[in-house]
Length: 245
Image 1 (spheres, rainbow, N blue to C red):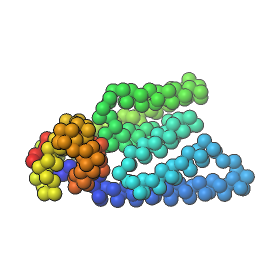
Image 2 (tube, one colour; image 1 turned 60 degrees about the vertical axis):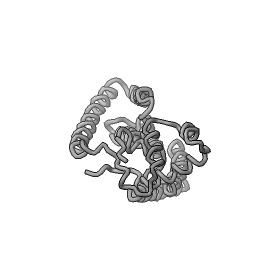
Image 3 (cartoon, rainbow, N blue to C red; image 1 turned 45 degrees about the vertical axis):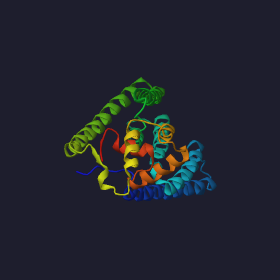
Image 4 (cartoon, helix red, strand yellow; image 1 turned 90 degrees about the horizontal axis):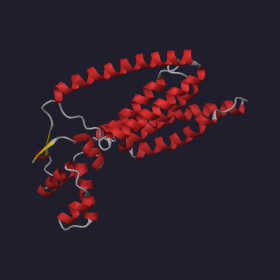
């Protein structure tokens, strides 16, 4: 099974269409909110003001779809809003939004460094927001806790079996074969090996007696050849792979 490249041209087109669809849906929803406001129905500012910001964010993603991790901002906001105004049992979509936030960040390689600290912070925020359910009373909180446990079990089991199925097809595909990219020079391949070792551009520039700008510009071309957005995208896609020249 071929390694799924989340930054390929086809995937970027998909992200662009998703961003455009989200923009249109949110725009229509806010237009109706404004119409309702003039009809005498008050606006929920805590949702309307961030929605205006998200409209700009979706426009940005239409232009720069490789920054899809910014969708985590949207999903996390609606998770937090859901936890503050309703409960897990009333609207389980909030919990799903939380898992979606994790998914976006994982795909972008956000947890590659300082993993325990970052995951701990996200779980801490989740715990604080979940404890806000206590405002509805102990009985309501316990019901929310039971609902949370049930939904989490379903999500985790679904992810686990999906991941295990995919892993069976990828067990022997941890090699990045650079020979299939004739546009890459021998030096490019050496540089990619250094990137795999977390070497900074400045160090590579000094090692090859080149300017930082020249190294950075060349890497932009290299990543374009490999169909990844940038260094983070490269490591998120091929981190842990062995390079074959």
